Image (cartoon, rainbow, N blue to C red; front, side, top):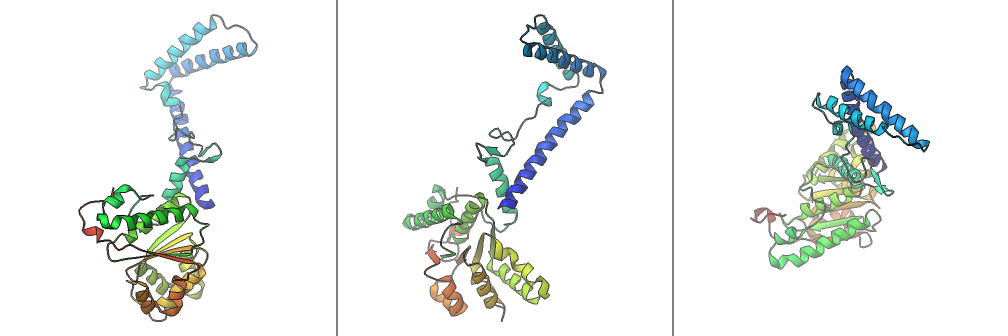
Length: 313
């Protein structure tokens, strides 16, 4: 998380410096015009004289009239180049923090957005950018399914609010095709990333190919291939049970990944029920996935939302 925060601040400072350089370059070009350079110099000279007199508690008298005329001449010199004083002022992108990234000792929303963008770049397999569940999610469902989904969404929001201090290390979402499992998991991942934590969403088939790549790789590269899966704060395994099974690879590597990630949250979506998971993956993996002390499962048994006309909002 700290590296992401540092990168976000570095990008913010780089953009701030770019805008400052644009102003400096503009001024340098304007000063090539003797008329502008003279007008600017006169304004600065008189303004400095007035400031010195004020610091000595002396009246500036008619000097103010000279300053006013110098300001008019300066603006006319700018206008001759199609510019105004506003073109020489730094205008922050964020009016809240002035592009400093902090407000009242906490991270500004602009930095949080930048961190989310950075984290999202490493999480391309997202089906939505939404960071919370909305009324539109429930409106897209048949009325009889809304209470169950509302409870599920509230549970996920509560889990995200505790992350990464939650006690659960396995969170499973089961249900038929198109019932919104991947959507719910992605919204949850977005909520986690919005807090500045790393998340990866891997379709089970893609993860399985990584297992095979690691299995076939030279020994010095085996760990490197799977390290992102092992070390991310949140791992979402999407559509578990749809992957092709590779003998001596798929099951042992899945078991090892789950074991290595003990204490970190792994979220799983699957069309399989408990008996299906047991039949497909065997006792050892089943025991890890349904450990009563560390695992929580919910079911989304609604209709295929991909076939419904009413979109989420």
